[in-house]
Image (cartoon, rainbow, N blue to C red; front, side, top):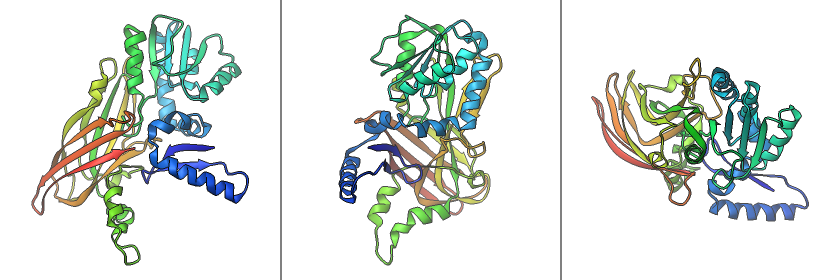
Length: 364
């Protein structure tokens, strides 16, 4: 069968297929898959993609992510020991087991993909079935065997923080089950933006369509530039300071807050060219005995979230100390809240260039 997941660099939808039988059968299955791909959004393959162990292997091997969650849980021992914990989107159950290890009285681990079946086996394999209960289902549809929980832990963040994110689900669970004054891990996040020089890659992936063996294919370029790319950005490409676009205080955040418009003002650190804006997020755990955090910045150790790159339609020539001003608007797609519609407006009045523009981007 097909396993759908988002391609990192190209922004396309990919299908990995276990091919069996004749070539004709395989071709038929591929044709069906291609037709299905055209009509699918992340909503259709989101839960199925998280059933496959490969994506969980990638997340578990993300040393920054996993070790900082483990550290946060250990630093919150006084908040977890003897308490009831809810783990939303538990995957393999690793965070639930961290909580059990520091003395949680009970952990309810929820996941609506098939990985929940394996989480149950993993919990039993590690002798924690008396503390951890795995529940397969959607948070919005299930009932817990308790009225309230003391702690909610969830690794809900997506690319660009909000893409394919479970934040809506975490908010629902918080409002339904978390005790007043209860602990949320993480509790504070920021979405940040910087400007980068990226002429080489932009030429390779976007300007390529201007002349393909002597033929113009600019119609593809016009679509490709509207799809943000998820990739590793080298820190030496960053040529501006950092601007915080959005603060997410999880205990108080609402579903309505996921639609926002934020101004930015990026100050050039050197004479350079800006080809793209790059977004990343920082995750803070501030409720423990000792606060900790991790960053998905180009300057930090890389994570599986990488960074999100928004190419501008024109190259911005900027001098040290000059400013690129603008706004970024983000809203969940009307057809599927896990997808995002993003608008970036910008203006630059510099020594060598005056530029103004607006781009519509789609994260699908």
